[in-house]
Image (tube, rainbow, N blue to C red; front, side, top):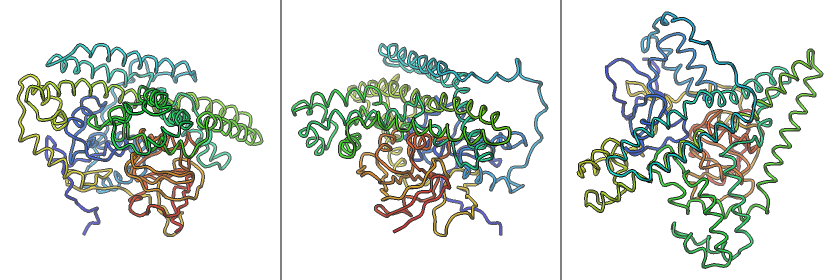
Length: 558
């Protein structure tokens, strides 16, 4: 009997034929494995860079074609393995069965591409600044132009807007900038380990890198706390907040108008974000600002004024000292000056580009909030016309179905009811990193024997070792953190970064070397281990744990 992973009741994506297929989870790459509502699924598919399919309320990429030839297979496994070795192992587990997906010959070469490979971009901060400015101009134009669109014309407008959305995200220069930062990270980690025995040296060298919109978002909430802290009446009021109408009540308290202005300013910049933000139906911070209150109160309680600037400067100094240390040690080696010169160029390159890795997601969710507001305005018209009982019912329609409803003023109430029930059942499903057309779910394994007995194995993504109290938190809005706490959660997308400023370490069940939580953990200098299977179930809230961020494992101490 062949040893295989358990075939579960997880649904199988629809396919055009009955051949064997291998699907890779999108949620594990996007750090959001919760189910998505139909509108969220359809909007992501319409704006994504690659074709996707869905099953169980989750999105998957059909990797069958890429894995069917030697070159495609080697390239995809190398790319996936760089960021998430569990997904690579899961793929290899399936591919090792020769009968499941036989290799086909590589297609005959069609000659070199016109113009050859693009030249590497220069290490120039102006490139990043220009990309950000063009993104902001495009979003501003979207906000301006969508304001006059209603009814069926809105959907025609959005169909065109999705093309602009894709154009910005597929800008070759943007891709080069992202890859420049990632490749410099890999180079530094590989070479400094080879030459100096340094593990994950890039973790320290990228501390407080510029132009990282996600880490800036976490520090900016410290500034909001600085405004609120001097006003005890405001702090007391925020401790009793139970709904999202608190911003209107703030000015009734001493210092409340100033506090409201600070929170509003934060929401103007970051209010389009939320947990699970790839699903357009999720409530944004601007729609549900109460989500931020626990993090604000934690910052008021746990930090002194000016913490944001001090923290950023401390990280910058640590990165500078690390650079001087490795360059000095390299110069003492044979051919040391050459090694040092090349390393210095790579350090400059990684600090120039690694922060931009976070910007495209900010662009996406900024556009999503513009789309969402326009669609909800249409939903309100449908409610007034008695077509829908409540505006959130549109979340259970696809984009095309909503377009049809706006045009015809008819909605299948039974379809909406059924989808609501079905969506609830999806919460009981656990998506795997890899899914086959046979219904087999495969999560992969680390296959390591270099960790202590009983330790929980994961992926080392941010160096250092830290010991502290585990806080198992599944909802950012329920966070209650003290200095020295270690956050243990299922996944962290960019919306979780405001919590990162107040913790000592991070453990997640999902993640990879270049996923958002890992990038921000490195920039903040937090020891972090991700991809720890069942971490939120194996670690109990309040237990004392030790996180080995350089070696990729977690010890439960008590």
